[in-house]
Image (cartoon, rainbow, N blue to C red; front, side):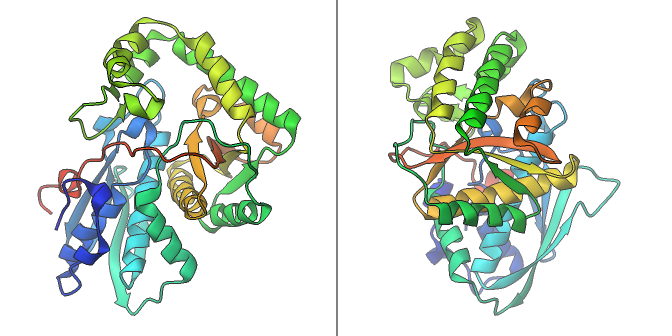
Length: 343
């Protein structure tokens, strides 16, 4: 069974007596709720012979902001973690192969349902239950600290998936990162190609599109959301956006970077899985997040971010976390829409 609105998926509809393929197709309803850059949802799935394959949909790439498809693969890694979490939730061990075919770069992972009887730890149940509650929250957060015990748990969550999480707790470091974010805004928004690419993924509030970012995610009313894409394409708003994002970064209770020791597709997939585990763990405790990736996306700023972090490896993502008000989710394509025809 697939769902027209994946956000309304219910585990009560799980086909417990179905064939493995039917179970896997149902589990895709959770995988498609994963976060992705500009909400491009750059994934495709094949289901056959009791196995699921995750493929990169490079037609949904962002050649200006993500020329190497690094963020695209990270997004697919997040969807992979969601699918694995669903497998375990419904009582199966998840048997996983990462990049199983050296001749097929688009085939990112292959999974099959392992033996039944997998007992789900309470923490994993909390992660699974957080899937439909997680979404990016771009609004300012409350002036309220996130408990140190949760921050330690988030670091451990990243390590579990082969990544590291660095928290900018020193005010000077936080200020330096906020300045990099502002510089990134000015650089990106001065580039007409970047603005055109961004505008193509920003939609009016009443859109029927199942991808991209509706204006309401930025706090736009219906009228402003209609003008949004035109304004983004036409005007260099870098100075104003830089001031806004600098304030958001410095005012956030938590500013964090997620990174890896290497910078190749296996590490990008690991980043995506770590991101999913971290964001779900935070959401299970009522903490929201949103991204401020400009210093990672602008090539000359990424090494400078690494210097502020002060450790080996490569920063892959930058985001903020804190407590805030409820926000609407962005649309998602249904599991049926991302399922390859032969499946």
